[in-house]
Amino acid sequence: MNRGLATVAAALACWLYVPDAAAQQQLASGQEVVPAYEGWEPNADGSFNLLFGTMNRNWEEELHVPIGPDNHIEPGGPDQGQPTWFLPRRNRFLFRVRVPADFGENELVWTVTSPNGKTYRAYGTLHPDYFLDEAVIQRNHGLAVTDLRLPNVAPELRVEGAATRTAKVGVPVTLTAHATDDGRPAPRNQRPLDVSQPATVIITTAAGLRLSWFVYRGGAEVVFDPPQTKVWEDTRPNSNSPWGPGWETPPLPGDGKWVATATFTQPGTYVLRCLAHDGGLKTHRDITFNVE
Image (cartoon, rainbow, N blue to C red):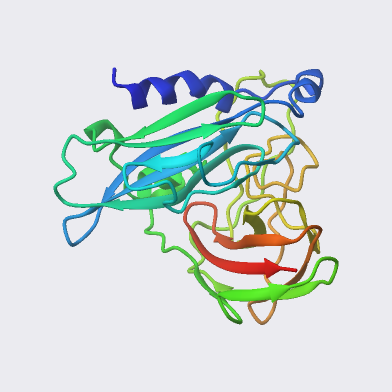
């Protein structure tokens, strides 16, 4: 087994386990981020995309690890588009790194050292076991085989305004996004919590178009109004998460326009990501804010 496969296999147990309330409290903070190699997909020009995600072992604490010695991708780095703000728990298919057609048996290594001092690496290769297509991606997001009987197209997304903007600490900025979808998979809410089921479960998700803003890069919390639907796999009840028991997909806005505000709590450079997700496929746009 190669190093990448070993890393994924070792982490799967914690990704598929839903801890009880006491365990959740114990893991609320102080844990580390594990970078994850998700797999590779071919491009029409012969090149490849290597896809990466994360597993933040905290259930509450969001971690900041800036680009540099503690967060780098090599060769070719240190910055190859990876996040610096790590949301809790599992976040799949966060970014792609394009590699040339002759990448062959080379590997791309993402190294993250968390604030608690623990270092983990994800090894991106073109090993056949890591091949990805849209069906595999959708299954990883929690869709069932029956959801994939009809072809799905990722949502279309447009964000109003410039890709780089300025803001001030404590002053809300307006975020306006337009999203549409093909209606596949069919909208589906999460089932209510069944206490008779064992603790080990396969992660599933609600379906239907949803849109959220979150911090992708930055050094401090950003407050969104209204509070955004979570983009990470929070499997707890009443967690405002499409992976949580009983969560219902909100009705779409009549004009296909989502409006929110973001308030920065500290100065610095931030990347806010707008994510449109239909439960199987997703589309994102990133907006950079220089905050005074």
